[in-house]
Image (cartoon, helix red, strand yellow):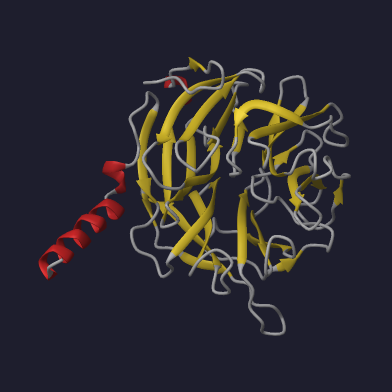
Length: 355
């Protein structure tokens, strides 16, 4: 291949990577906006983004560095001001008191009605040995408190945002990977100062499940949906505010062993973002349900080859829905959805309806 041909091939590849706004997201009713959080960053790879709303505006975070599990991986933050995202700033790293550095993992932002913006994350050599950390911000994510390590048996929300219960406690979906993939729930009534936790909800064998996301039904019943190694999203229910949970079972939706996230909208319906496939991490889909059990196809966020994964979804005070997710491990993608404009279609025999 000539030098000119090599150069042209590089230019085509660069255009494909950088111009994701034009190439990535199919058009679906209800999708208002799609953008990247940043164009340039001082890290090579990113993953596990999260989003929260503050009085000052939206805040996003993710982990970034050489690659997942590398010692230089830290937690990076960007804030939306004047309709634009600020340049990424590292808010936390994995430097321990003895000076040794470990990778950071899976940040989770949560802004309670009263109190500072919370940022949970993990630090450690691997998901089997990591530990939970917490920092807080009183100024909408501009500055952060000194990192605080959570108790040894508490990991904090493992990937997905916690839910504030009616009694004021924060219910966090958590999981562990040291004795198989097992789910448990953690609760704090004082924004992370003291904690309690449930027993594990699965044995790690019948279902290898992690990273629960929580739905709140009108009746007060709680539901979790979890990533699994069994090819399906798995679910469980609680009738006593998260103290005990039903036996885990398969849902009707596929899961290619990839992270998911769901939210209960203020109107009462549930919205889920996930990969509707049994293999790989494309496409990335949006489904909606009235009861958390029967889901309808709502939108396709990505359907080209590549990895589109680990979504976080949130409904803001204006009623719009915001989704952030990993775009090919190179960037963080942000999509805005008007849930009232989504066109719902039946998912028949587990197959996503054709456009």
